[in-house]
Amino acid sequence: MKIIKRAANRILNKLGYYNSEMPNGSVITEKEVLEMFRTYGSNEMFTRLLRDLCANDIRTYFQASNDEDRRTIRGAYQRTNYFISLIRKANDTRKRS
View 1: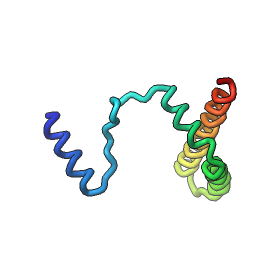
View 2 (view 1 turned 120 degrees about the horizontal axis):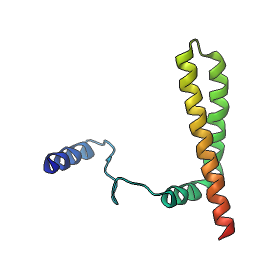
View 3 (view 1 turned 120 degrees about the vertical axis):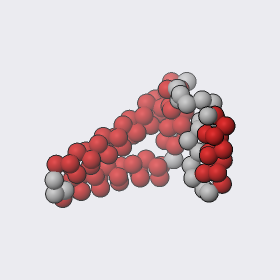
View 4 (view 1 turned 90 degrees about the vertical axis):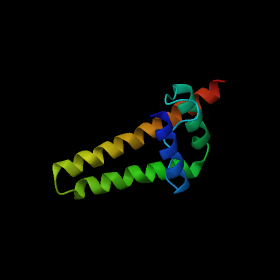
């Protein structure tokens, strides 16, 4: 089974699809997530992009025609705010270090 999975992943990688296999295993630690957001958080353009996405989600939320669309937009907004909070947390740990 592993051989088939590896072969399928190689074929998909050659076709340009994202490799879902994590190099160090499938579990990402909190330290790795904070390190990633510390790196991206130092880039002002990335944080501006996240804030622009939040503003766009707010505008489209009120234009949504049904509750399902509103729930989807609300989830996207909450996820983006969560990423912004991870950047703040990562920056706070950098300042303490």
